[in-house]
Amino acid sequence: MALAFFFALLAQRVSFVGDELDAETLERMRERAVFLQEQMTLQWQHVENVGQSWMGIRAFLSSVLPYWKVYSLLERMREVFLRDEEKQQEKQQEQEEKQKEVEKEDLFFADLLWPVESHQSNCRLVHFLLSGVIDFFQYTLADTFYPVPERAIGVGSAYEDWSPPENEPVYCLLVPLMAPRGHVFHLDLGTPGVLPSRNSRIRVDLECTCGREQQMRMKCFLHTAWRKLGNQRPSLLHELCTGSYLDTEKTARWFQALIEDAWKRLRFPKPYRLNAQARRRSCRLRLTDFDQTVYLVNILFGVQQDNTDIYLNSQEIQVGSVPSTTWPQTCAVAEAKFFQHVASHAEESNFYVRHMQVAAYIRAGLHFSPYELKTVLMHLLTAIPLESWKGRYFLLRVDDIVRYLRCCVEEKRLNHFFIGNEDVPAEIILPQEFRASQPLNLFQHLVQDPGRQEQALQEVEELQDRLASLLIYGK
Ligand SMILES: [Zn+2]
Image 1: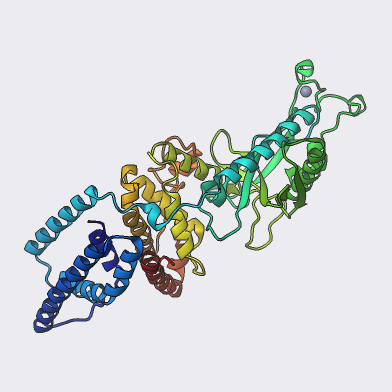
Image 2: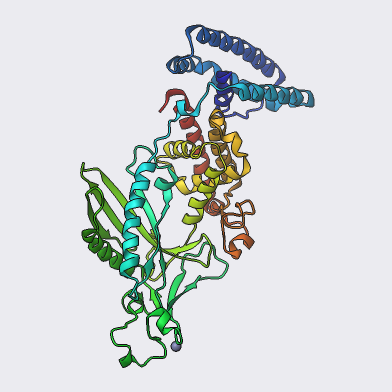
């Protein structure tokens, strides 16, 4: 019975109060618990009589809230103080029976609680438009010595489909850059052993092309006299680098000018007005279509690390000021690939979206970052079989997210998903050092500052209350 399951879950929301109680008090509580159980049963029978519309269910839950709150508190106290083997076996049996009921239950669809609002059609549109531009660049830049952009990769919340519905999505695309003919990118990964690297750089070297002049349609930069090079200039090195290192700001400005020019020359099926603005290290596009719908697009640039799913990228860095030649490592492409991998192995491709949307919704104003919640979700998606994420298990899985987060805060440890984690699917190609590394603790700040752990624990309580409120009242 769906509501019985709902009760079981909601009952767990009530915080346990660990005061010591004597046997007489416990007995009185036990009697009270039995009484409340009877009251709840009566209320439930009433609901069954009036029908099971969603509004009816919510009204019912509101009416019995005081009962289940008190009841569940008493029950949890009993569990702690009367813990013996017989009780444990009894509890296990109850849980198995409850699980069987849930298995049979198809009434409780996740869509009823949290219908997914998807931006996927807009994601595809933005990707389509940018792909057209990138194809054009590949054609026009083929005979130059500027970097060659490759097909953009959709990354981040809009493309992973978990933007909070009320927020205007920003469609984030990472444009991989390839070195042009006669140039090589060397990745300088910064401080050894520090992952993901924050101070990595991309050194641009010229390479010898002697003997391949005809095939590469160029003279060797290294072994041809300067005056014999004619108009052939190493544009990448001269215009987009600082010293020998690729410069994020120069790259962003170059791309902005490039896309503005391309937009005038390209004709799309429908007219889209483009406003391109080079931000410090990325490029922000504002696309407006014929009916004034606006699409905000953020273009990042990246260079792939070997053939892995890890890139050095031009993401904006908020903490402190860093040189414009800094290209931090990013796992954004690996994350996108992970969610694609999960989707391809599940019956419902975007089943995880509503879990992330709920998490994003209830965290508003709290200190847990979307990335921390996404990390929790990724760990759970590899730990719990995908068939157990179906609609009827929606509440259990949402509950798992908050419980997992609570455990992490209590233990002051949330491991980075891609570093030192042997559960990362083999389809995700990671650098050897990522797999061989010790796990990276994203909650290290809680270890260093006990005050922050206390605050985080309070915020987990707040998350649990908000989740209960969302499930009962829908807001
Ligand atoms: Zn040469």
